[in-house]
Image 1 (tube, one colour):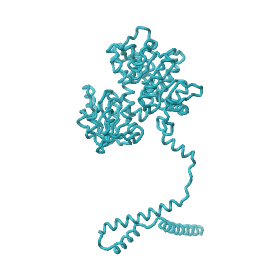
Image 2 (image 1 turned 60 degrees about the vertical axis):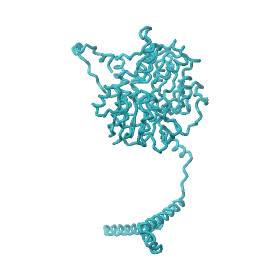
Image 3 (image 1 turned 135 degrees about the vertical axis):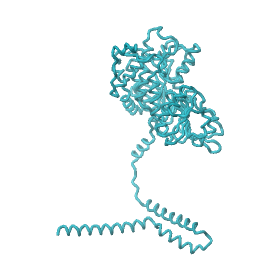
Image 4 (image 1 turned 180 degrees about the horizontal axis):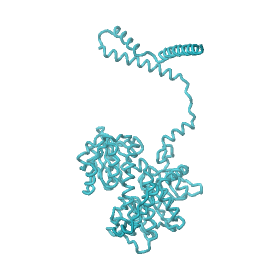
Length: 553
């Protein structure tokens, strides 16, 4: 009996639900306006009224269009009647801020006044710096702490030689990308005893919050995201601080700082013990000075260290190029035709990443050795002019000048993406694009449409500057390898006895290269095999290295 009663209750509930559904459906139909059947009936009734002058297809289309307008109007009126729940102002502000703040911590809500016209002070009253907003220091400190976790070798250096202060008395002036990863290097140099002053080597790559954190820590830093060319040189000049400070070691990335001191303050070289340079462009400039007999001090070429070439240049670019392209263009890579200019370590990384996602990759090269490597890796080596009309994207990574000229840009297809993965912005002939007949349209941060008179456009990223650091971030781990190499090069130059290094460009000894690599192995739980005495004697090398000759790259 209980089961029968329960069954009757369920049946009753089901009938009630069905009645409710029918009622709701009728209610919904009334609110939503005429359905498709009603619209067709309305169309039929109009055919008779409007006569035979108009085609049937046109009448149906017009009827549907009219009734849909009626329906949408009714829905809009119904929607407008509904009460709107007010969003608290503070919540609205926080949502807006979080959506506009980028990975570089340069939110659009920041004051647009030039930092050159602002007077900031740290919590300790210091004001010898030029940044966007000192109030971002806490956020920048968190960014630096995150980077420290992925930069083990620098943290090991702090523990191992921090108490010895191998850079005590060193006054390091630096011009690199001002990012969380670089901040870990700068603060490591400080722990090792150095005084530091810093400027940015790229007008787009500075992380404003990180710059604020460094300033709050007492490090004079002159950098902010979005500097003009005039701001760029002003920051370097203030960083040099010739009136209040005398540097004795230079850490440069691109050679701009070295060039500025050579041009404006040549007398400073009397006290400078050496230069550490990490980029292809900067190293090329140093070799030119050395060849002309104008290099005033010894210089250490970090760019051609094995740890820099095989890790920073290759693996860093391999992982970061896709990030930069996605953040700026939302492009899908599968099936796209991409031309990569240059097949050095940077080019190899870019090609591998693009190929892995299904892009059709072409390569241009001037060096036959690099060219045959590209061929053996499965890429077609051609000249730019052969495919410039058909490719969807052009990536430069040669370190050269005017690799992509106006004659190439004129022939590119509509919507072709043009970007640079080399250090300098000289690889794309931008001067030829700043003419009256071409229109520049900023569509996103770091994304410009260059529009021709016929409406055709190319998409230029970061104004031809370094894509990955201007438009995205890079893996701290690979930068840890480069930064540790830079730190060891500074220690070597600063502590070298007089006469060890002459006025020339030197490579870091392979023993140091291997030491840098060994500091990063514990992070992979890697265990090296040790040579036996017999094996060591057979190879003619020490059991403890170096395992490669100095010329090995």
